[in-house]
Length: 363
Image (cartoon, rainbow, N blue to C red; front, side, top):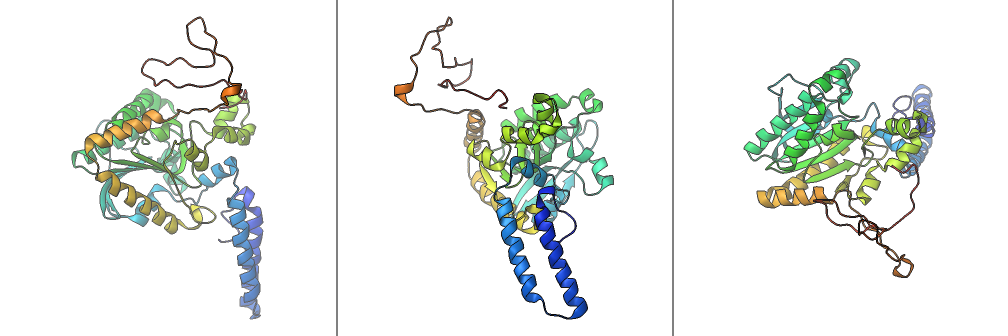
């Protein structure tokens, strides 16, 4: 961990320790005085402080880590863990969206189709990629390559890292909402295994456009949400200054989403975040993909699709247990449904849900 650059606002204590280490190393080089013991002591202190800090990140701090300018991008993971990568371009309808990268490659010996959001490394590349916000042609390009993979019985690996779909008028004119909706439908019935991993930001429909799969995982310090904390705060609290409060309500961290069964697994990051050790992060991601691709490839297509459908149907369902002695007596409503219980909608599984008080600002 180098001092000076790459530190977030809440990491200022770590920055000061890193600066002390740098000064000690400079002093040792200039004067020849042996301060190795003090340097070792400071490094131990730095590690302990980092471990304590990252073991109790708030949701907003997690968002900051996921957005870190040095956090590895899809192109970094491709370089670190994918062999024989052959990039594919275009949607055969409008153009080639640089915000979505697609191509064939090998991960841990498995031939796969890789689909991922690309934010870009420098300013020029980020502008070309719209900072990872894809246009309709990006999602149509992704779906076209997924169908190509299914044709040759190759699994699909999706790496999600976007604030959301591109919000400009051009994207609206070319049907961004329809492009995402079609992807949701087609990915749900694609006859090949799909593994999705949120590697940074997982924002709104832009993330869902390549986020339907048999396995969905998140890197430890990434986030996955229906809306950004700033957008949520602007809507609910009429000011983006309440973004920390919104982040708490959105339950967007990997730990919270794992509890809610929205994701299947959390992939560990090195101490201090993926940006401090991209190689180790890539190794952890590769291990996860290798294990799950091996298991999914063993399934028959009918079984694969059935399990994928069941997984999607279970999203968002929950039960509450109550003390039977304290349960209020049911009263019939005018519609004939006991009060305190939701009537099942057409095509929706019946869920018994008891009354409970909720915060007016709960998202």
